[in-house]
Image 1 (tube, rainbow, N blue to C red):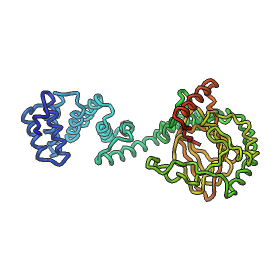
Image 2 (spheres, one colour):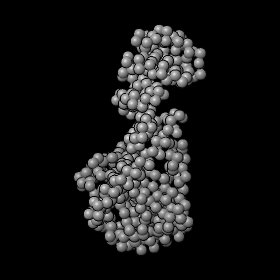
Image 3 (cartoon, rainbow, N blue to C red):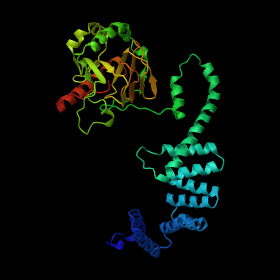
Length: 436
């Protein structure tokens, strides 16, 4: 089909040029040249035609002639950011940094997140000795890149340089700010500043922002807190006090070859399994011994661990029929890692009571990392990305159970419970457990 059959009216020249680009991308160079000649013959003063000719001149080392054509193009169409960027490139070739910056600012006024314009502007600022301004612009450029954004090969080295500039500037800025904070910190010596410290670390790009990302149900307006303040759960005192007895019962379970330890991850063997779970799927490298499972007590296991059962009597259970409460001994084998993941719903929290913790074990929730200490419980939001690892040569074991988020009122708990159990009834199956 000829080009004339595919283009009409005011869209003719842009469409011809687009067809030429497609032909060139597919290796049809003769066709591309023919289509471009046709566009030039039909509308030699069209801004896109001027732009194409200017780009050829720029590539052949004629920035002055290219600059004339790009300037003429933007006079005809000042709303096209690409034309301004090319005018800036020609200005670079002519060593006119002020003109280059003005053209780039015009492009960014039209398209603020244009990556090419941002990177080129930062480069000009570097050449002019404006190191801090360049780092700030590079930072904006890097933040504009989404994880799925394709990056052309020519840009990769530029982005590496941009990250190096931003990192060096962040460290200088951090030192600059800390000098101003020293006096304030001294005056606030008795005040906990961990939240501010996290704020500063995120600002300095030493940590990223982690949000709640439940895989099933999101309850709005609940604070995204990685580790909750231990003082908000005073009933944990009695469970912690029983740590020695609980550990003894766990050791007995682990010593029994016939113990009902199950792989925590059991997803089948289909292709739909996330790659991160393949290594642990149906493996006892991460195993659990259920005391409560999806709202149902395991009387045989509780009878085998009577002191653990007694310690859990005061546990304020998250009651959701078919889903919770859950309480397990979680055993992570030597040299095993649990990959980053998130839990099901943020209206509950997860409690860890460490029992057997060899050196080399750790746990991260969001941007905060903690070491387990036997007998010292902590409460965390499992809908924030978390991971665990055991780099030792021995198993690691923790008692884990779930509780309601204390910021959920009793009436809201009842409603959430009704919705989740109703979903299970509607679909005829229990909702998949996750996040312990």
